[in-house]
Amino acid sequence: EEAALAQMLAAYRGVWVFVEQTEGEPAKVSWELMGVGAQLARDIGTELCAIVIGHGVEHLCREAFSYGATKAYLMDQDVFRFYRTEPYLDACCHLIDKYKPEIILMGATGMGRDLAGAVATRVKTGLTADCTGLDVDDKRNLRQTRPAFGGNIMATIMCDKFRPQMATVRPHVMPMPERMEGATGAIVREQITLNEADILTKVIEIIRDTKVGVDIAGAEFIVSGGRGLMGPENFAMLQELADELGGVVGASRSAVDAGWMPHDRQVGQTGKTVRPKIYIACGISGAIQHLVGMQDSDVVIAINRDKEAPIFQVATYGIVGDLFKIVPAITSQLRELKASKRKG
Amino acid sequence: MLVISCIKQVPDTTQVKIDPVTNTLVREGIPFIVNPYDTHALEEGLNLKDRYGLRSVAISMGPPNTEATLRKACALGVDEAILLSDRAFGGADTLSTSNVLSAAIEKLGAEEAVGIVFCGKQTIDGDTAQVGPGIATRLGYTQLTLVDRIEFLDLKRNVIRVRRKLEGRHEIVEAPLPVVITVVRELNRPRYPTVPMRLAAQETEVKVWDNSVLKLDVETVGLKGSPTWVSKIFSPERDKGEIIGDGVGDPEGTANLLIDKLLSKDLLAV
Ligand SMILES: Cc1cc2nc3c(=O)[nH]c(=O)nc-3n(C[C@H](O)[C@H](O)[C@H](O)COP(=O)(O)OP(=O)(O)OC[C@H]3O[C@@H](n4cnc5c(N)ncnc54)[C@H](O)[C@@H]3O)c2cc1C
Ligand SMILES: Cc1cc2nc3c(=O)[nH]c(=O)nc-3n(C[C@H](O)[C@H](O)[C@H](O)COP(=O)(O)OP(=O)(O)OC[C@H]3O[C@@H](n4cnc5c(N)ncnc54)[C@H](O)[C@@H]3O)c2cc1C
Image (tube, rainbow over all chains, first blue to last red; front, side, top):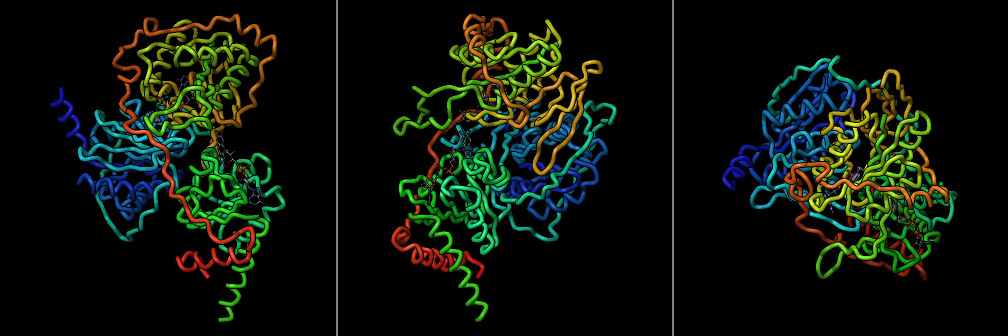
């Protein structure tokens, strides 16, 4: 039995990253996954491959090479124009059956989770959700670390007797790898026989959200406010500081629930995961559901008048005091600094 | 036609802690709630019952005390509540969970056609969002995840059109029944049980189906049927940072100190 298992495991090689795209436009999380995928491939001495499925998407293979893939499996057919579970599921399973990867990574996005859950079920393997840490043990098994119970605990999950090992990762959790202009790789073209008439689901319309919301998830500087802000009008003070830094304003769920800020600014478990250079938490206590959304920021600054607030446990620099005094002080000093630099 | 809502009983996650000595979850005394997203799955099942006369069924896999969760569904007005409970089902990951749930749905479907299966978008404990797609894939139903609006349900043509909520966009998608739909909170506002309904629910029978009813291969359920397993569980590590300056007595000076620190680390573009 053990020999059969070893033989099965040895039949699967390669690290794959699913390249998510909508109307030819790639989701950035795919490139973030290339970064961690390349590391895993190096550690176990195998290749990093991209799975590119769509219509008119060959350019994404070249893009994938520039982020570290050395091979791309391309399935370019009319039926893949819009994402629908059935055809994409068929396409992925076709590739998996034929080329047997040992690891598959997908973004934990609406599309990625939809597809990953279906693929893992059909190929009858394990799938670990929302990983924040991925590495391999000495038997080339993937160690998948993820938060559960709303971030109150971390768990390391193994899938050592099944292949492929599948994992999803949320956007902005892994750092973006550097782009290598002009890097090349091999494109492997595959097709399945599937016609539009075979597919029951129809995409009637894609409605892009027109209200160009602020993309807090991609921001380098975030100044966030919580219940300590006392009211919506005081967020203007945070906006001033954010403007000075070239960043955006975020919020805790309490501030969002109170109607002080729109939901697209919410950081945390039920909001966005962010990873800015500097995250400034003002009047935010640091509930675990908030921390899971921002604790990977490069530098966390916490301003809170309660020195026992849990936010100080993740803060690189904590300031105990009244945010209504400290925030304006930081803003005005930054302004002076810039003005004096300009004068030379 | 049946509309089935899958509901999971979950611990109130804000209360979950790890025992620092044994490194296991402290389960004693933690209150259980219906997974918040599943209250919306339940509500939508009841909506369709009210509007189209579908028969609504709630199912849940879990230990015997999950009966309490199903009783809450009865108090809201479901026609039938079924608890899927067997020692063999314990320790399940999402693959073996979807196996048990879809077997139950298949069994219900043998008596009366299944139209729609509602699941929550995800749970607040396992938090994977994988069970809905798992059920759909096993049953060969179309899966429509992250639905925030039902555009229409046409029972003459047997089609449903929904709106899905994705990153930066919405999609309007149409599919023939049967479908599995996972719901987000924006879909509806869950109703509250009335007192008479709650009292009546005390009397309602919650059926229990164990594996002698579902007859699944024990190698495919519970821990045995789970490709993934938890090898380690720990509290998130955090490096305690530094409190700088005297923010109370000297806010200006402390702001200055902070800016100096950021400048020295080359973190400010000035
Ligand atoms: C399932 C679930 C999901 C959740 N998801 C999220 C999520 O995605 N994001 C999220 O943020 N939360 C989330 N929460 C809520 C979370 O548990 C907390 O309730 C919330 O983060 C608290 O927000 P807060 O820190 O703004 O408010 P509070 O906890 O009330 O903290 C306010 C802080 O402001 C400080 N303060 C007050 N006045 C001043 C002043 N003048 N100067 C300085 N400091 C001051 C106080 O000392 C206090 O620490 C979730 C909860 C659950 C159960
Ligand atoms: C710390 C920890 C980490 C875990 N990580 C993983 C992992 O990465 N991968 C994995 O496969 N398993 C994992 N599990 C196991 C997983 O939590 C269980 O399999 C669970 O039974 C279903 O997964 P979920 O809670 O994530 O449900 P989700 O997939 O998030 O649930 C979606 C919907 O499915 C329905 N549903 C789910 N469970 C039930 C149920 N029992 N009865 C009725 N309806 C239900 C509900 O409508 C729910 O809203 C983990 C468990 C623990 C303790």
